[in-house]
Image 1 (cartoon, rainbow, N blue to C red):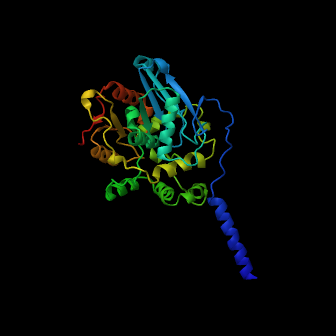
Image 2 (cartoon, rainbow, N blue to C red):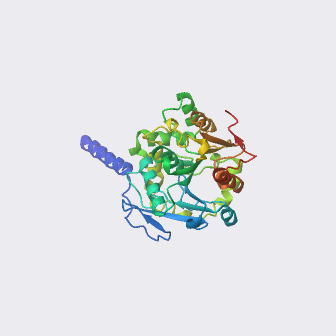
Image 3 (cartoon, one colour):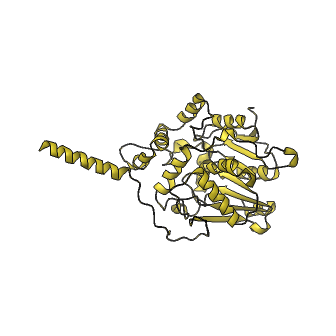
Length: 350
């Protein structure tokens, strides 16, 4: 009797565990209430997008901006129409797969998202070359462009770029230091996403233990300047659509993609612009010294390994520097016009 009860209890636990760990079914192929224009890819999936600035046909500069983790094409962009018209600037943002109004991709990788973006740009007729500006986690794709299709880049800016602490070129001690920079809860979440991704849905859904300060946007993650910047950011439109396809298709797949094993090591990349006398494009990293999500020490190491990347460090900047008008304008002027900001440290540590 007791044996049967124990067996029943054990079977019930296994069934409960399986249902808890198993990811939810994917959403229906068609999203409801799609209001944004979308591009249909050769795979049949769609990417939703949003345009800013001057018409792309007459633009002097065409820039694709790639949103970060748990975000969308509707992120807060503090550029005035007057500023964009003065530069002849066209900007397009888009929802990465599984976010907002873009269809999910159950097999997404850094390479697949990079290829998605290239096809998206071609169907928008952005030209043989264009600029890419990545925000935080969105820089998985900027690195992807630099590895897979650097010839398509007119130039690139990696703003507070995401760090995969398992990239092989990091010295173990430095990598461990950067990993410990994260809140302990998020260290555990990143470890699970890397080593046992099948448990990630359960870990982020269970209620017994707090699993992530990043996912709940804890105030401890933001610098003093970031706190002030959050106020105008909260007014951005359509934030309710970011996770409308479910947390698994948006946040969870994104985590697994970013911290998983990449096909390449960013610190082994070759200079895509080896002939400066030809006035080719440029690649930049912009980092806030007070960033509480990404340790500046790791960004400096990357810039040392890749001396062809120009490194900009904002002394009192946090993780949200692109969402401050003064820094946002400085990034665009530097990347597009070559204007060097006087209030930012440029490669001073080298």
